Length: 453
Ligand code: NI
Image (cartoon, rainbow, N blue to C red):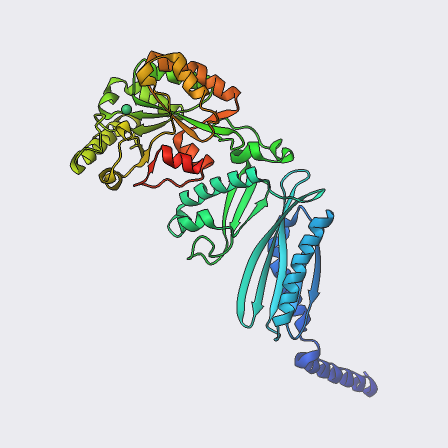
């Protein structure tokens, strides 16, 4: 090798050493822009799988006074697109107004769901670091090819009723949820997904201890009849799920003083034939006469309540006697159906403060009295119901002791159904028609129904 060549090599290697030094100082180190972009992309990755329904448009704005990166869905429905764009812009503008350091960041992305061929749900999620504080939130949009979707009242009401039940039944949340807030809170959003409607409560809206959103997924099968047609056709009918159709008028038939081997069974035959249910208030010391009839009622989805042990007027009874009447009946219930009743219909509708204070059950009266026990005349019982007028929300009192009543039921059940009523249990009526969380110590009688109908 010539000296010249060696010299050139020395110069070259010297140059490269200089280049290495320069790189490590600044020029070749990752730029803050690309660090930010990598970080944003990593965060976006978490959403990619769920974005199958809609493609993303990404944009990165690095700035020494706060950076923004967004992944935004491409939406063809015009008003849905502008609603989503407006929301992104609002978030960005609010951030820009307050951001001041390189550490300040706003990332926005989304998940999208194909609820049916034409219905899409989009959940926009942002994560923000501002002045050292981190925050995040979710906002939902639902739309079809024509534009943004407003959940109609029926679907919204039904979804909320079921969501509340599911939340309260969920041990994970059960203890932290504030029941009164659950009923009042308007801080929730609905989202159509592939499998159901998600109800998303804002952080702290119903459970003070929860730091993030509280979410419950109501399967479409549970709200089938109220769904938009395009979703409904993908949801198989499920006979095992008893659904209350809140678009119908709701009425609760109730039968006291049983169980009766003959007439309870006849009434159940009619109910079963019309796929309907009722509520039976059974007398403790009568239960051994017809335990099978009581069990059958429970198996058919009917509700069974207590009617005291010996049909005692509990208004004139001592506190000890009240407790005894309730406890002895509870024992009979557990023997036959395996659980204690949650409701008590006081004999004669007689209620006083001793009973209110010493009864751990919901006190249930009625709003329509057929006086079937007095007339024992099928036609009079039928007429008393048919002439009542609007029966939506009514609790009708009858007794499972008479042939005339059983015959009247054979006529009334089909008549009610033909006239647009759905027969429900008392609990279902209170929940779906009145949206009432039953309380002990309160008597739900004629006057309560009059003022809440
Ligand atoms: Ni009675």
